[in-house]
Image (tube, rainbow, N blue to C red):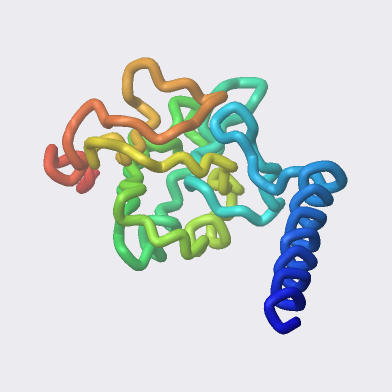
Length: 166
């Protein structure tokens, strides 16, 4: 009798397991996303890369070269130099260099920017084979302001070529 009750218990357990499996296959939507064909909807406050913003009408950087972002950055991954605009009023950036490999996503540069020239983008694909690909320089050839994605700079770190003292 003990042997027959254990077989009955095993069949009952097997039936319950098959029912749960069948219910999950037929009634529930899949939880996984077939990446890279499908993408998750990211939260509004998601922190991807820091991106340098441009005026949509003129295509010029919104940056006023006030250097606040460079001064407040804890890992000092931002380098910026500016000069007077040709019109005579205000400043414009001569270069803006950001090393995303050192950026700790603290958001201090975005919060301190008086011109709202920096923002978080929704890019979360940060895998690269060469760490130089994490360098962002908006002057590099082929830079697309609409994409505003990090990429390889046209020259080594700006302080190395003496441009930072201007």
